[in-house]
Length: 220
Image 1: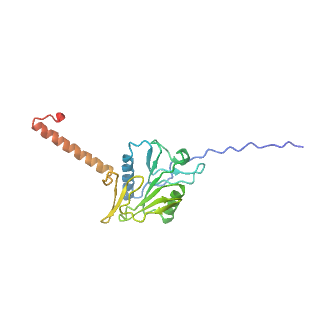
Image 2: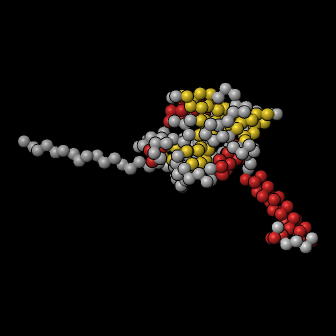
């Protein structure tokens, strides 16, 4: 009688979670500018909060050992997660915390089924707030807020304030403006730089005027 040979146990191969999905970040300047506007302002707003992570065009993997289930939101905010470099956001390595606030910026290449897939993904895996900005239709924006297991549509976006981020959406005179917690409209990096340059120019002129009057600017 031949001996029974027990095959060795199968060793699961290491699963690779790519950091890039091969898709472009944006299709046009309108979409890109909104992505930069949202990301830069949120990142600045939480710059002193060590437990708030802000990212853009960054893959989220919600299920361990599943590298097919994923999405890369244009911008997201994860509260309760430390600031650090990440190749991708793997929920099981983040204390089970799915990013609470998601922003997508619509582009003409986004098909309805793609946007529906994104919505289903964010709803299923735990987003608390989901917003879509339409750069080419500036009188329109959409938002959803979690209600139990579902994301419920925000009935009126004009004047709506994000519970988590404090961002306020205003649809007025044919345009969408998003305001920060400080009550001011979000500003692009170019606008911030221009304001800084203007302040520097005013300070330089004031210093020159004080010197004309015989006053040391450093003593003022």
